[in-house]
Length: 301
Image (tube, rainbow, N blue to C red; front, side):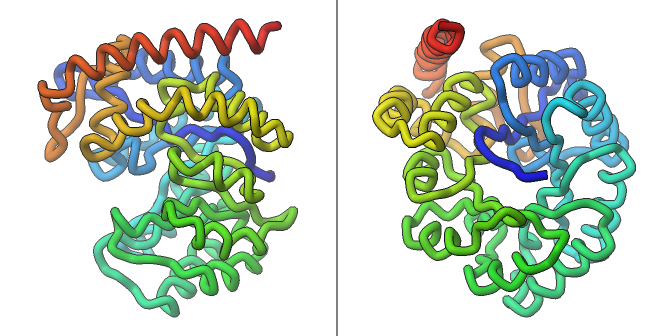
C-alpha cells in the first residue's frame, strides 16, 4: 500500500443527544467515496478520538471498513501517550480491519527523540498494521525531528509520515526521505499545495470533509504538474482554510457539517462554534456547495 493524493481526516458526527450518529457517518463516508477521496482516517484528532469509548471506536472503524474496504484504504488513529497502550490500540484496529495505523507522537509526555525511536519501532514491530507517523507538535507538545523520522523511515513496517508543521523548511527536510516504501504527506491544508509542489505525495486534510471533490482535483492537478489549475482551486479555498482555524479543530469543520445535515455537535470539553461566527459559517457553506458543484461539472466533463 502506497498512500497518496487526497486523504480525509474524518470528523465523527454525533446526535443531538451526544451519541454517535451512524446514519450521518455513513453519509459522510459515501460522500467521500463519491467525490474520489483516496483514503480516510478514522478517529484521528479531527475525529475526536480522545472523546470516544472503546466500543464506539470499534463500531466506527468496522463500519468504515465495511463501506470503504477494498475501495480505498482506511487508516485508524491509534496513538496514545503510552507505548503499550498504543500497541494494544493498533492491534485492536487491525482486528477491526483497518489497512494502516496513523500514530501520533505520544501526547503530553514529551519524550526525547530516542524515546520516539523506541516508541514507534515497538508499535511497528508489534501493532500488526503498517504505521504512518504523525507529527503535530501544536497538539502534542512533542516535535519529531527530521533525523528521527529518517531513522524510522528505514523500518519495513513504517510507510510514511503526516507532517503538520507548516514551515517550508520542515517539509524540505523530509522530502529527501521519499521513496516507494515511504511517503511524505502534508498535514496542513493551507500549505498542502506548496508541499506537493515541492514533491510531497499528498495531504491528510480537514477541509476535505466538506470539499472532498475540490481537494481531489487540487491534488490531482498538483501531482500531475498542472500548478496553474491547482493554484486556482487553492485560491478558492483560502477563506475556508482561515475559517477552519478560527477555533480549535474540529469545532469549525463540524459546524459546517452540522449545517449540511451531518451531525449535531461535539463532546465536552469542546464547545460548539461561537455564535459570532455563525454568519460566516453559513456563507461558507454556500461557497462550499458552489465549489463542489462546479468541480463536479468540471470533473464530469
